[in-house]
Length: 197
Image 1 (cartoon, helix red, strand yellow):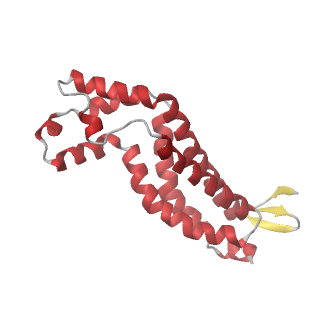
Image 2 (tube, one colour; image 1 turned 180 degrees about the vertical axis):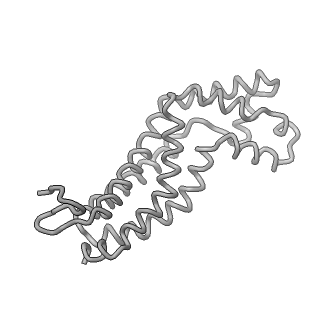
């Protein structure tokens, strides 16, 4: 039976530090963002891709220039499985942490830094797509790509998604980066160590 009591949560007679609870809540929030993305992409990705290609065509470039340069606003089914797997892993770790299972804490110590580095790079590209694509197009040295108005086609694609989509993408970036650091710190503190022992 769980009940809030000051800075701890009582769990079968054992006090759970608020830091452990906070770490688990952050893991669950991050899991939710990883589950939301595939659903939204499945529903709106094709429309977003079509909008981006239409904008590129309006600019006077062949619409397939985006696909040829691996710019996609939708995902293939295989690409959608990874976020779901990450979400399930985060939920598992959060549940283990809430129950004081040392496997959850050790798993979090391993998983969160990996997610911080790898997930941080991937989610940065998604959260700041215009900046990333402008830089990538310049690095190719292709004069056609250099002339494309990246902001215009990214904005066109983003209008195909719900208005709340980009804030959720950016929230996921913050949770993957800063959140992973906070989770690691909270699960390393003395109160957490006493709880998991």
